[in-house]
Amino acid sequence: MSDTLQRFRLYIDGQFTDGSGTERLTSLNPYRGVPWASVPDATDADVDAAVSAARRAFESGPWSRTTPQKRAAVLRRLAALIERDAEKFARLESTDNGKLYREMLGQWRYLPEWLYYYAGLAVSDIGAVLPSDKPNFTAVTRREPIGVVAAITPWNSPGLLMLWKLAPALAAGCTFVVKPSEHTPVSTAAFAELVHEAGLPPGVFNVVTGGRRVGERLAGHPDIDKIAFTGSDGVGRAIAQSAAQHFTRVSLELGGKSPQIVFADADIGLAANGVISGIFAATGQTCMAGSRLLVQREIADTLVDAIVERARGIRLGDPTDPDTQMGPVATRPQYDKILSLVADATAQGARIAHGGKPAALGGLFVEPTVLTGVDNRMRIAQEEVFGPVLSVIPFDDEKEAIALANDTRYGLAAGIWTDDVRRANRVALKVRAGSVWINAYRTVGPFAPFGGFGHSGIGRENGLAGLAEFQEVKTIWTELEGQARDPFTLG
Ligand code: NAD
Image 1 (cartoon, rainbow, N blue to C red):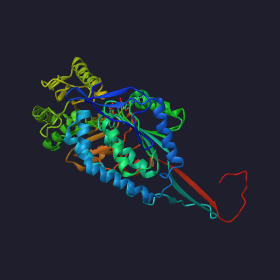
Image 2: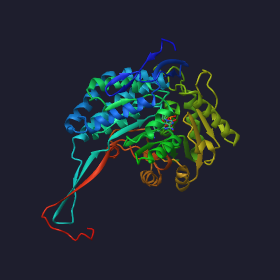
Image 3: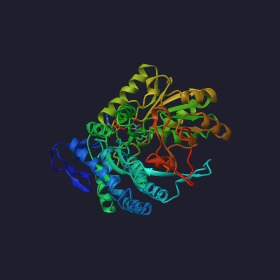
């Protein structure tokens, strides 16, 4: 293997290590099509060592037992280090996954807010005194850390999707083992250096790199209390099945086939802008991609024309160039999948209003694509493409729009575009999706729960709901008066 590759290591029990094996995985720069970094392919023994370190740190180490105030202070320290190094991490990620440097930088600059938010919740009053109906009892709840967490993350936003798990897990008092995608392991491996500098005790945060085998080892591990996964629904199902052996808790943030519903009274310019941002930003490689445009028939042509006009002007190119708007697709299999789904759609009768081909730039670039004449039952409208492909489906009235929006096994997000506030809210109530944006798309925040209905997942990240995913609730009853009760009745 070439010496020019940047080498990264595992991080286990507070130590950087090459692990116990000899194999390494190479990370490709999708824009240049060349290998640029390598990480150890962790062995089963490495995974077990990381889990044992996290278990020890949880059971006997200082983290789960220290005061919430001290935990919050470490989270704030880590946040400040991310602020300092955001540019470095954005560069590593953009090189690793081909997404725009400016998009990754926006994410890394925003990520400290997750740590500040959960540091605040860590020191907030989150237990409860319950309204006991028995005068001789008090009852209180405590929220206790769930234990050792394994996070398994995808390639599209590795740092963000790790921190959405790490910030609440640490705030709750859990310990953590993370396995990033084998396609984009670098930012997570490098993040261990910040954790080290922030002074997290050994074993609280561990990184193991590798592919499916390492993920499977974690998912079926008897000593893990919770798997926090973001990725595809197929892998999510496999993880849930493995986790069931040991009743390991799971939260699953999976894919989507999210609708953008545009009514005839919407501001066409704003709607076109929102649709573009939903499907062409990040080259369509976002879980919340608004990949189905449901548009009221009388404005369908006008809106499609406005979107095609904008799509024509999208600048493809080097992800690090500030003028670039769309980078390449991250991997060859992903590139092949996108083109084959487009071919399937046209074979079924869909028409290409724009794009539909490999881009002239070559490499892993695909043209921003708009398909009309799509029927919602076609594969292109039912399967996650994870690429820059918009399927346009007209509707006649509100009822049909809602039926089409919900005619999917997914339910991650939806956009509603209309100037009628009553209609916007009626539709928002009826669409089965975890996030609904009215006259907007793709906004998130640490305080706002995010997750899916149906095959888009189980559980929520962010907000109070995101903290609860890393806690067990314990109820403590105390008898106050020494009264014996009938041992053969409940109550
Ligand atoms: P993926 O499911 O292929 O892989 C995700 C992770 O799982 C990787 O780390 C991979 O190594 C690991 N893995 C693979 N097989 C495994 C197995 N059998 N057991 C345990 N781990 C295994 O997903 P991807 O291609 O990296 O990412 C794209 C997917 O992620 C899309 O479906 C997208 O919608 C989804 N996603 C969802 C959200 C969300 O918040 N809902 C956010 C981003 C991405």
